[in-house]
Length: 242
Image (cartoon, one colour):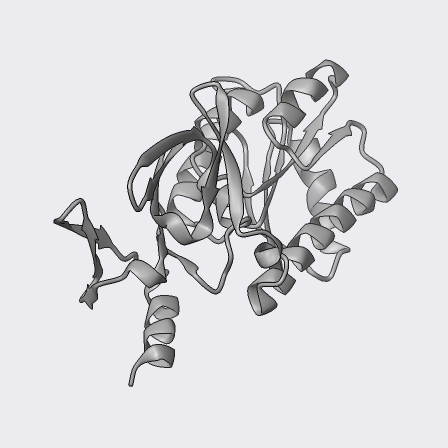
């Protein structure tokens, strides 16, 4: 199921999207939000949301401003009556931009895009072939694109709109979200262990309780393991245990 939330200050718009969602078997509406502040609170407590339909013109906090403060957003589909925000929306990596009034046909076209994205992600997770096509990634840092080999990355830490990529011998700060970066990393080496951390399992020294220990510049680095991620880490450890 594709877990979905709607964010719009217009009750009618919420009702229309909810009606459409109810007609799609693999969509599950988990929350209706009347404003961005309510959505932010929900996303903070629920990190398994796959998709958000988001209005732009809302009181207190607009949709695009909301996107800019999100650390790790789900896939985003903009729903608005204003076409002039399209460029800025796509610069924020939204998946689709739908103009109101939204027809069921247009809605289903957007859902198909989501399905394709999630399918690629699932195929990658199962086989890792998509991610392993190359052994490096380019990230933008300090007005230039830096190539970093996957094998050199020890862990990645998320800080609001930025990530810190810690390698064997350097630290790179990049304007990137954790979720977008996670999709590009090879799943046979990297695992999310916390909302703010992705680690390379090849650099794990030890796992103690809810903490992963690594060596960083000759010192002990302790990385927290979130309760929602611990089972996946334990599974990997069990697979590699003698």
